[in-house]
Length: 305
Image (cartoon, rainbow, N blue to C red):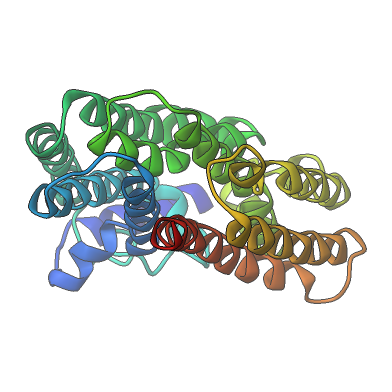
């Protein structure tokens, strides 16, 4: 009876649409999209090559549109569990403001548009990476991993780690280790970021039947995994410095930021009250500052020399 009630409720909600522009924009997951845009810009700025500013702007628009398209299709597919979870039940589809088919149509159209636009504005390599990123997020993470394995955000994090790579190859078609490192930083950052959230939202995930690590393996195992992944960042995050891609400004900043990250993770491991939301919020600031200092370091070095 409970499952039937939820199904009827969802059908009743999505049969009518009272959407405004803000509701359709919310389908694109603006927070996730803004992170993709930001890291793509950093990847673009770090390349040794140059691109016309006009083409750079349209390349970034394409990358942002691709991220938003994947988000819209994710919301379409997850409409059933979004209705159950307290954190997501006010989203446009479960709340009844947007029809589910409208979200799917928006996602598909925007996906095609973004790939074509990036191909025209930059090159086929960047467009291919964007295509892979969208497909990976939809089919590998959303449809497969999210509902079937506690390693969902570990493997699925690859999609979120690709934007700086796409930004790099929008300008340069030459292979470099640096975009690989940028990918690895975000890839290793993703698990402790989302596991911190899942620790204090574990009942919500359990209610929706999503096999997040705290739900399947328990909170203790999750805390151990958080500290292990956080410790790996002390190797990965400063690597652009000690491998010679960036200078001492980045090296010092990344080391300090990562030590603070590990400190907050240690508090989570020790089960300090309120430590999980603190780590979750700091992890967002951490990634922003880490990537922000990269082009600053690069252009200060160029200016000095």
